[in-house]
Image 1 (cartoon, helix red, strand yellow):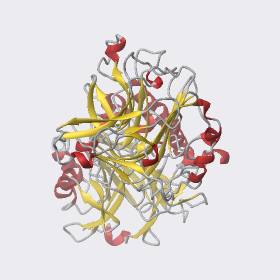
Image 2 (tube, rainbow, N blue to C red):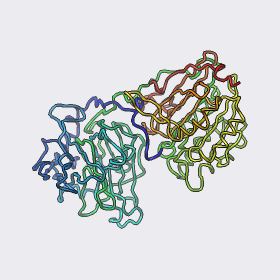
Image 3 (tube, rainbow, N blue to C red):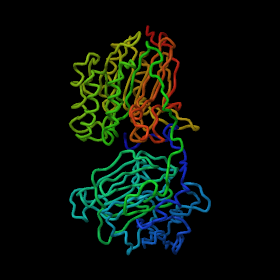
Image 4 (cartoon, helix red, strand yellow):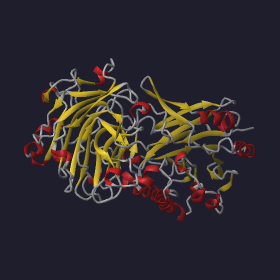
Length: 601
């Protein structure tokens, strides 16, 4: 997935305003009764103003834990800027919509003439705290409704001042010691420099939605760290880490990150509370218990058949697997193991990967992908692979692992482009021989003539084009619609519009789900489908897209299924864990008159 994404928001993936079902229990939590483990508690409320005011720029927020870790307001930049008075202001909004509870609303942005944040007072005890026995850091926050990566990326929620160089570390010398921040993709990143290692260790979350409240919890039990968002850990535990490195004379920033000991990105959005304990708290001790997204999407765990008739057949598409290769390989293994065991049963004639097999050019990630795909290789299950932008690197690792040589002895595989990234296959299914054409996004222009030659040589074969970048989702009038990318427009103009045999395109790359039906130059339907769940829970929660072809009923049935969730013990399932997604972009059917559509004379 590219850093600049066209995703605005989807009905599927958008999490409705969080319910926080038992949020009122926060005041009655175990931690409220026994606060000896709480080393700092910052409630951003008028009730917890110790002295000063925002207008005068001398506001002091008291440490509600009474440990002496008060916060002081810091103003930077042009003190006379008219924007300054709005950079921080009181808001009546809070995460559970209680009366007489407020929060602080920040409106900082990159390259602003001025900005405001908080830092711990010089004598605050937490400045020296090393947390060698563990810690719990909680934050109740909301991102701004106008979030833009160019204005708000990598803005800090909570940051320990200092850099690796201050610890005499050469590697990553400018890297921040500790930060809870928000990436350009609205993911939460926790990274810290532990006392037992010479480098930073990080945890990540899924992509959050703008203008919605979240409860974040970073919990270290003295051995490993887990990051949860609304009670869900998307990527599990870190490697072994102990404590948080500290530097004498350095404190903490709230609402600001640093890089190279200089302020980097200030926060925008709302902060209601940040609380820090010096041990791992249980969920029952958190500020918010049972925090959850209110119906983040529609789904069911009741069985939905993949074949409604024994003569029907399926094409299966594997959405971006990059988060599985990098952080959740068990999900990748689960997907491929299910395909290996169920291809024959469900008459799956081809399994096609839409790209971004890995998240970065790491040998470990490539090996994780190979280990998963070995399940289907061993059973000689047919599959094809498109590359995504994360799969390109010096030395062409994608070609090393998944180039033409890997497929040379597979009967369905018919050839590749000069770049090696484009390829095609022919499979028999029902009444037809289908052609699956992989059109590479990076080598689109270079492979264009080769792609045309393949299409011209097989005008009698119904064709599916798979490329990493074709359509992306936008929301218009509260409904998700598909929009062509620049690559998608070129593919349409050069490889679809005048090639009547192309009836389906599938891509990933952009966050979300969408589909549309367009008419080609002959006036016939072309279905276009985006499937990408990487920004959602656990990097996609194992969801696959199956398309059942029913020639008798002249229908196509589109289904979204997760074998990972299906195999999950009942006691481990959470409110997000559905075997099948059932909203209109994940479970739907389309009329498709096969004989008429595939009459290419």
